Length: 305
Image (cartoon, rainbow, N blue to C red; front, side):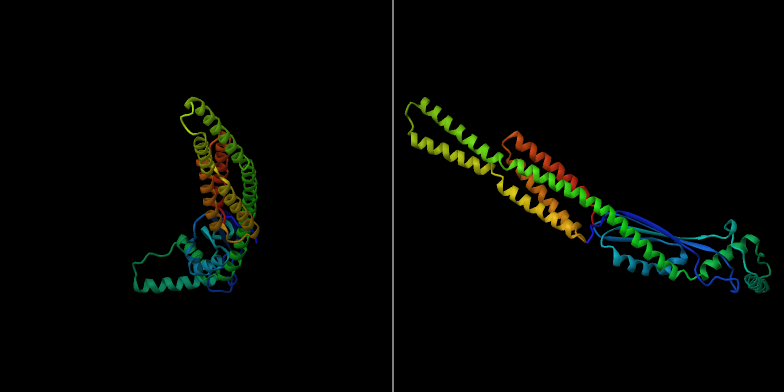
């Protein structure tokens, strides 16, 4: 499966719905349905709709359609119906004008002081009648399916880019871990030698007041305690295990964002421990470099579904 980003955008348009013809009692109007979907990262799937009144009844269907395709992300759906009549004016049909005139006469019979309809009123009613009677349901479903598929394709392309970047960071972290591994035994040996040298100096200053065997045992005990305190082999092993799991998830794809986020937290914990145990400038530098890479990975993982 692909790795999907939660960031994406897609849009599309379709022609006017079937059923709006000159033979109807309503005006014949050309229209275009437009739909755009944009998404950004979010912990859960958060769908919001901004639709004209003519499309409100189809919101539940759109929600179900997108819910089947998307797992996470803050998704905004915008719809619009745009008139494509010449000059943006809907030309009323003769039958619509006859019907409108009959309605007006009926109203004025009961309300003689009612104002007569103006040309602007007629055009406004013609446009509203066309949009209200047009069956946009099938066209909207078809368009929403197409735009949703394009959004998934866009999120997959961005997800592939994020996966490549994460794989690169994983490789860099492995190199840093390889650099850190041999530093600890070297440091332990250097410290052991330093303790023994100090013991020998102390023996010379003490002029035999302390038993050599006891002093040597104490020096070796301190060296051993130091080695345990700075040993980062366990942290490096766990770090390597987390990197293996990240690579496995990137190959698997699908809904992996939350799992990756947890692993990034674990990586950060191991890097912090490694830095706290650091006893050399080189090991400290490696710890800082690891934290920088892990923070970069955290930012990228926030966008993965």
